Amino acid sequence: MRSLLRNQQPVFYKLYEGEEEIVDQYGNPLGSYIPKYSGLKSAMLCVSPNKGSSEVEQFGSTEDYDRTMTTADPNCPIDENAVLWVDGADTDGPWNYIVKEVGRWKNSAQYAIKKVTVSQYQAQKEEIEQAKARAASVGNQGEQEK
Image 1 (cartoon, helix red, strand yellow):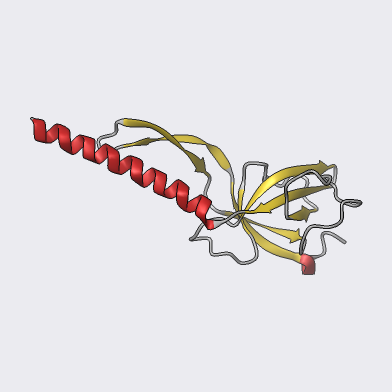
Image 2 (spheres, rainbow, N blue to C red):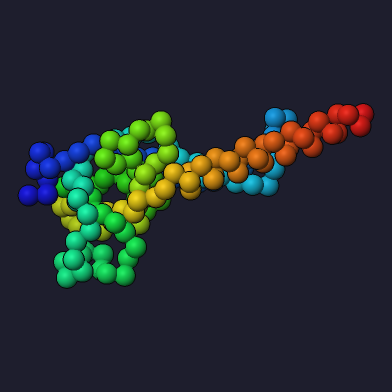
C-alpha cells in the first residue's frame, strides 16, 4: 500500500556534501564554515499527514520528528543530513523539513522528518553575509593604511 502512485507526492531534497570555508573577496579564509549541499533533486515519496501514535511508530516515541516518508526504493539516496522541501514548498526559498532518522529494509525505506523554521535558514544566511562584510571592512582598512 505504501508505494501506490496516488499516495505519492514530489519531495525535493539536497544532500549534504560537507562544509565549505567562507572566504573574503580576495580569497582569504575567514575561519567560518557553512554546510555545502548538492544540487536540487526530486523523488516521489509517500508523506504521512502527521505523526502517529507511539504504539506503531517505527522510530519510537523518544525521537524528535513530526512526520514520516516512505518509499518502495531501498536505495533512495536521502540520508540523515539531507534537507527537504515538502508539501509544495518553494524550492527557491529555505527548506522546510530535515531528516532526523532513516529506517531501511530490504524492499523499502522510511524517513522520520522534522519541520524547521525559516529563521534557522535565515540565521545561517545572515552569518555568511556578516562574515563577508567583516572581511571586506578589514580589507578596506588595510588598503587605507597603505
